[in-house]
Amino acid sequence: MTSQDTIAAIATAPGQGGVGIVRISGPEAEQVLSRVFRPAKAAPLVSHMLTYGHVMDGGETVDECMAVLMRAPRSYTREDVAELQLHGGSYLCQRALSLCLQNGARLAEPGEFTRRAFLNGRIDLSQAEAVMGLISARGEQARRAALKQLEGGASSFIRQAAEELYDLQAGIAACIDFPEEISEEEAAGHLRPRMLALADTLDNACDERAARIVSSGLSVALCGRPNVGKSSLLNALLGEERAIVTSVPGTTRDMVTGDMTLCGSVIHLTDTAGQHDTDDPVERLGVERARRAAAQADVVLVVLDGSTAPTEDDLALLTRLKGLNVALVLNKADLPARLTPDAAAALLPGAKVLSLSARDPATLQPLRAYLADQAAVSDNLTLTQPRHLEAARRAASHLRQAAEADLLDFASIDLQSAQAALGEITGDQVEERLLDRIFSQFCVGK
Ligand SMILES: Nc1nc2c(ncn2[C@@H]2O[C@H](COP(=O)(O)OP(=O)(O)OP(=O)(O)O)[C@@H](O)[C@H]2O)c(=O)[nH]1
Ligand SMILES: [Mg+2]
Image (cartoon, rainbow, N blue to C red; front, side):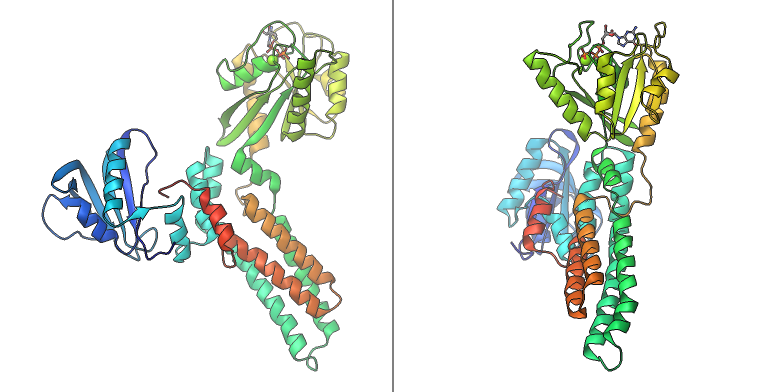
């Protein structure tokens, strides 16, 4: 696979739409376009200008369309790029694509246009990944983070760190090459604090929780003993009858999930089976799943029935959840209270207590505000992709090893490893296999 060949793919999503776009990129893009597109007025195409005409299969008109040619290097891939803007039907797009393939292009791999943009130096690897981040963003928070990355936020941070690393490596090389000018102790005394400071800077940029929330949303588990109103609360938050609600304890056996967006953040809700001591084998499986969901959640909402006194099952559950990020939801506030917010707060000191009724949507606002607050992450987040965090942590760990090395020779090897880890983020040092893995996650046509 080389950029010597010309690739084509449908760039718009499958299904019917106002327009459907077939994109072509490579040295033959203009020729392929000229073979399948006939402009309404016979005149040469002007780069970056839309031209009205028809897609032709020999003498047969296939569709009326607009075409645009974007000559290199002012294009997405930095190659010649041509696009056909057709009527947005799946069959039409397929037919136009087939024509391009019969006329000199080959079908693009997933992400191949963006891969070419990266290989041709228009964007670095972290920016290429941000393109997919933007496409898959489900809320404002993810969109903002991906755009920042696309604009080079992560790249410039990593490049600055890489510059400091080069300086450190140069310092060590000077000491090894000119031992009479600077002693090893002197150099180490001077360079080690800088290695540790850089390791701290990298570690501080790695906020795994925030990064996970940006990419997958805040995961929230609704837990509690049977019949307290967990499923009712899920439905009330989602505004739809997602889970079955009955007055029979043990109604929910499996997990029921649903997503909502609050202040631009995606909140991933999981309703779980009521947790209590039971011999019923099906319920027990449900309870096990509920416990797993709680352990994996960013926030556990323990639902309590405010119209009854706390039971053994409530207390056992609160004990089991110690150490997790728990908030107490006192449900059924429309009924006479048997458990006050103060009494609930005493059950789990320090936990947030929210009183509401799943039957009255107007009472849910404080819970929504609480969840939005839990999902909020700093706008200054630099690294948000798990792959970048892992590489930055690895670089920091090599820097710490370098700072501890007895001999500068060894430190130098650790610094090279740190440099390689940072290079994986921007794609300066990257194996073909890693590129294959990253771009295979892209959609075809991007
Ligand atoms: N009065 C009142 N009843 C409620 C409220 N929320 C839920 N209920 C009732 O409580 C009963 C149990 O509700 P569910 O939502 O099924 O409870 P659950 O916690 O999911 O129960 P399991 O699935 O069995 O664990 C149903 O009869 C609901 O209508 C509320 O805020 N006020
Ligand atoms: Mg339920």
